[in-house]
Length: 123
Image 1 (tube, rainbow, N blue to C red):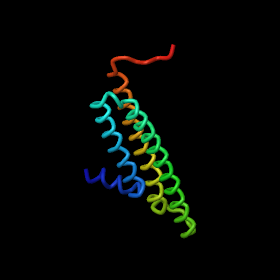
Image 2: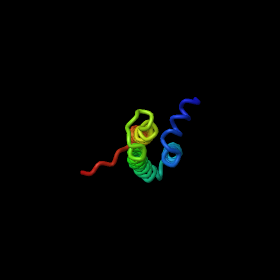
Image 3: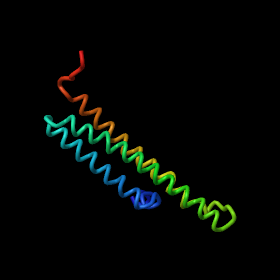
Image 4: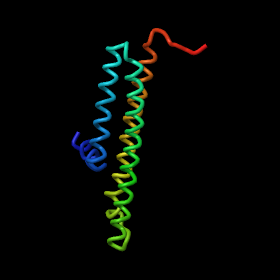
C-alpha cells in the first residue's frame, strides 16, 4: 500500500488528487444512478463527462511532467537518468490514472445500460 501511495505522489499531487476526486465522483454517481432510476440518464452523462475530464487532466499532468524533466536537463546541461526520473514519473502516472478513472466510468455506464429494463431506440 505504501508503494501505491508513493506512485500516487510521484504523479504530482495537484494532478493525482484531482483525478482521485473524479474517481470518487464517478463511483458516487454510479451508486446514485443505480438507486435513482428516474435521473439515470443525467447521472450517466455526468459520469461520461467526468471520465473524459480525468483523461484530459492526466494528459495535462503528463505535459507538465515532461516540461519539468526538460527544464531539469536544461538547468544541468547534461542528461542523466536520475535527472529525468521525476519528470518522467509524472508524465506516466497521471495519464495512467486518468485512463483508469475513464475505464471505471465507462464500466459503470455499461452496467447501468445493461441493467436497464427497456431501451428507447429511435424508429
